Length: 122
Image 1: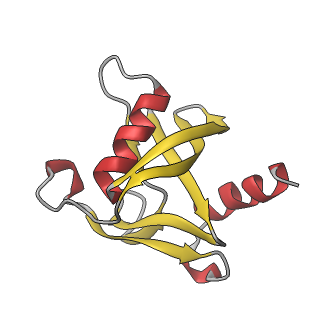
Image 2: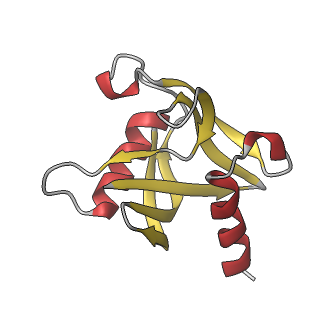
């Protein structure tokens, strides 16, 4: 099971550039495996912190598919950085705030999530 966070701020979304199983290098929402006895919410908070340096609070569950939880979250602390010493971050090249107008950064996995977010905030 995977848990990921979608964090929007000032027309930008927090993303990580990483190597993934489905291809080569893509921009993705921060997230990862739910460990042990973690709830999906706890996993999302931990993964965002590990991958971006930000502490977040879950706002709501945005989507749940068979093996993936997607939460909307907001930054409550920390600063943007990737801890390259953390073993789980070896696949991450960078973390950044991506402007929502940069359509080329979003693929068939991330674009529908952003669309879902737009539709649910109207």
